[in-house]
Length: 206
Image (cartoon, rainbow, N blue to C red; front, side):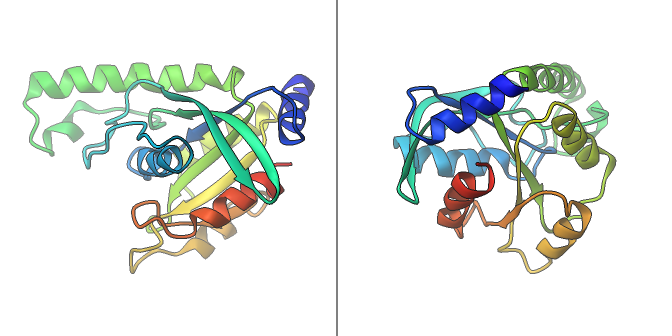
C-alpha cells in the first residue's frame, strides 16, 4: 500500500516514476470514450475502440508516457483502459445486439476473461478513475463491487460521473451513492469538463 502511495506522490512532485492510472467501471459507462479523450489530449492518439455493444474492451488497453500538465505540475502516466466489470456475463445479452449465438458465446467468454484480467491489474495500478454512467442508477452491485475492491486495496479513487450531456443524467445521484470519494462531472463524448478532470487528478488524488 505505502509503495503505491509513495510512487503516486513522488510522481506528482517531479520524480521520474510513472503513474499507472487505471480506468475502471461497468460496461458501457463510457470508459473507453474517456480514455480516448485523455489519450488524444496527452499523446495525440486514441487508445481503444468504442462500441454500443457491451464489453467492446475485453483486454487491458495501455498507452504509455501520457504527459499531463495541470495546475503547474507535470505527471507522466501509463493510461490503462480496463474491460468493464460485471458480476455476470450472459451471452444472451450480446444476441440482443444482433450477434449470432456462436459469436455471442465467444464474446461472453472473452469478456469474462477480461473481467478477471482487470481485477488482477488492481495489484499494479497506482490510482484509478472510476467511470459511472450518470444517466443510470449508480447504486448497483457492480458499482459497489468496483469501488469496494479499490477501497480494500487502498488505491486512490476519483469517481467520474460521465454522460452529463444526456437529459436524464443525474450526477448528484452519484455523489449521494459514493459520498466518501471526490466526484467530477464530465461528458467524455462531448469533451465537456475534461480540464476540470485533469485538475481533480492533480488535486483530489494527491
